[in-house]
Image 1 (cartoon, rainbow, N blue to C red):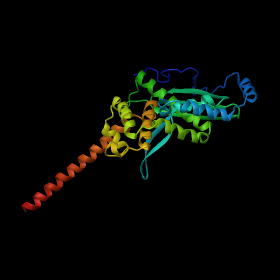
Image 2 (image 1 turned 90 degrees about the horizontal axis):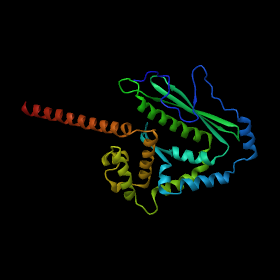
Image 3 (image 1 turned 120 degrees about the horizontal axis):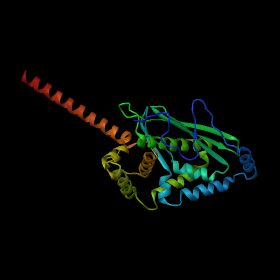
Image 4 (image 1 turned 180 degrees about the horizontal axis):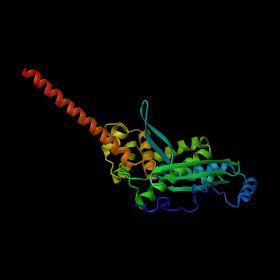
Length: 282
């Protein structure tokens, strides 16, 4: 049990602590210097794109870490949403000069942790804010212990970071690079079945079975694997790692639902069988 729920579990370097009384985010004393420097040394968009492409595609492992995907339920069934991961956001921000990200932490209120980022493009005088709130209690309502609160807060910061970068910097600039990232992540000359071996090894290490993975991409066997499915699974692995998704919510809940459906069908079959016997005995 956490004694003082108003105190954050940890304080990353540079994080501004915000209280209800001070509800503001200081930009620092060097604002004028930042603005003058940005105007004197404006970013070179061509160099930005070259740097992002070079770093994000320098190896298959790096490219794979740039992917992100989660499955979301919609009106027309489940849909896999793809995007770029926290790693790709880091690559983009490191290349996009004259930009400042200011993390802030509103602490833990006993139920939720709330963190965010102010992303400021000094050169264009454009700023946006992104705030993330994550539940930090067990199923019975007890607050997380310090270790779980630390993990939850870290995950919230990661998601806020990625979202802030995506909102500040126009990701349409990187469409061609993203296609190259996908190609490198798939491996030169490797079949989906060969890629599957590596993916399965990772998911097995976090307690996900082969059957669960196949169900996730809606196929019966590895013979039906496609490149898009491989990309989706690589992206899911990153989403789980950064905290945007979890093994429990992604796989366990679906498995319990499937088992419930099977049980219902079994019960229905037993009722139908009993009814048939009853009619036969009349």
